[in-house]
Image (cartoon, rainbow, N blue to C red; front, side, top):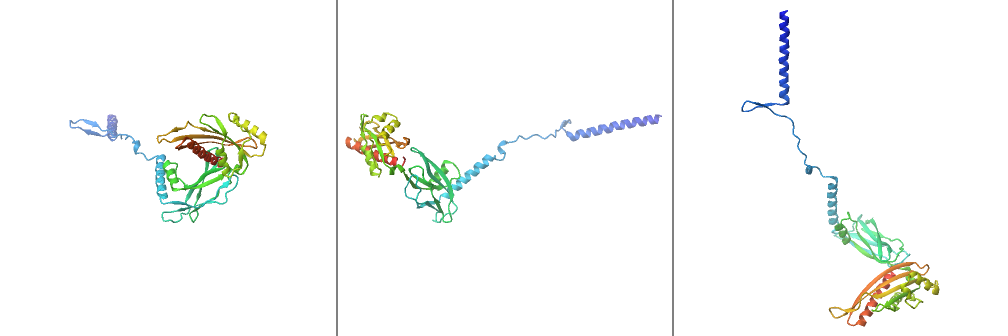
Length: 341
């Protein structure tokens, strides 16, 4: 019985030693120790420290990539068009509003050696509509053919213009420098559409004012310019300037009651001094005039065109400067009416 007891006690002690041994071993694997110079043991931590992430070293964002690609494309575009030349092969003559152009615009694109450039993207900007003197343009893109040619046939114009069609390399972006470079490499061609009213009879009710801001007579300067331009126009049947201070509808009704449908349009308004005539540093007289004009359809009284034109002139005498200024203003105003009405 004693032997059994001693054996059990021996086994228990042995198990306790084994447990202590494994416990020490496990501690040494998770936290190794070092013996210092003084003989003391210190535990060395094996936990890995977290390294802070440097955001500036991250890969570029999509926006950065796109920006670099855009800059590269813009640089390539400028290099590409540096040796490009646009030339006008042919263009149509002037037409009249609501009448198609007799032929198409043809523009050729060549490289620095004078060779045609096929499949080259070209943007065409053409007048499309207008509100008085404000013009709206429409654009379209086309590619040159095998001979480097662009052929553009405008649609039937619904408005009158004295403007231009522009052909230029299609920009790769809306950056101002790219747009400027594209326009500089392109070419412009006249786009002239005469008003259809110019082929019809009309009347004029435009009074010249004197330097004291008082109305004189119906402007013979503007009347003469319109007649010389081939327009069948005469003085309005109302001789006084009383209707200048009234709505244009009143003038239309009063005129229509006299002439009826005999005329297709009426031009009404005034020509006034911007400021009194004075001498400049050179001792010459200076005159500046402004014409405020409305063009009315005599069929229904609608105002089809409104414009304001200014003109200045300088001359040795007061009489001459007024005469010169009125003539110049009449020519400018008549042109605006014929290509804007």
